[in-house]
Length: 405
Image (cartoon, rainbow, N blue to C red; front, side, top):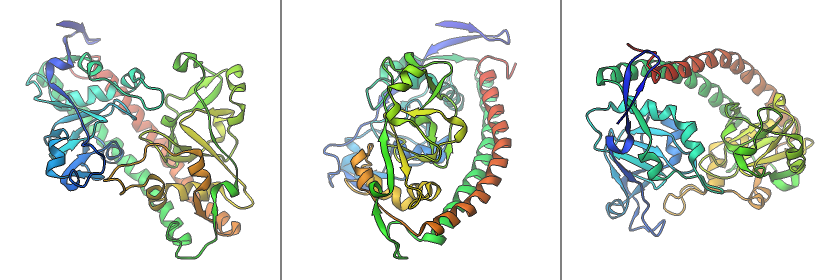
């Protein structure tokens, strides 16, 4: 085994992950949607479950029958899992006994030399690194062999537990702040429903039009030749699906391209007030308005630009409509095919998608109300960024041996 000397002067063993646990891949019964295997009483963890619960996760979107569970990968409450497709490298601890989808790898029979919470945070710290190792033209995947060879620094167990306790406390503070942000989003959606009703049921009888007829552009871009190796340190922003979240834009890992690269993507130049919509992968249907300070910008093939004809369609209204629960369910096809969720939406599907179109004056009135809500949210966001930066600093220090002696 290797050893590494921390910045604090301590020597910690480096141990391959496969030495610390049994590593198993999730699986899905075939054929997909077969009633013999799906919609039973055995919960199955899906990638979309992770966006909700954080460190501890409870399956809520899919389930299997007892027969289906035999063809899947059963795991126990308290087991650690990690995503290996779509949104790769994200770990979680299971709140219940369940099966795992083939987009996960599970870690079972954990060695007594490693604390599970410590391992969770170490793998969380590696998420961006493991994501970069994922391969695939459209859907990125990590291999079991890649995970087996991850080197884990192993300080004495009491130090591992102390590190995990400190990071738990910092993470709890961060999640409390995130819950505050959710309240603003929930308030915005409540205002939307109060003014317009359910946009799918359309109880208020608004006019309905295909998205193509009330937009000037719907389209996605491409990744420059060479992929990540072609990105620049500065230049024109290249927006990827990892940057687009509901109601917000994540600046972390924003890519840049030069003028020559951008000229090849002039057909997907991003304009002020464009709606950004993820069309592939685990983040499909995430949606936000482009921040003006990001411009000039282009998008890659996983993100679509939706540019509204503003005489008919207010972009803020459109953003809130597309992230509403009923519209997301409609777009994703949740509930069909034995709980299967579509992982890609085509340009044609977006163009033909029908939405309610209330009078533009009413849509503009909605924007004014939302601006008041999100103005206060932006104020709180600045203090929350400080909390998040503190957590990132702590987690970096933890695995350098600077957090505890």
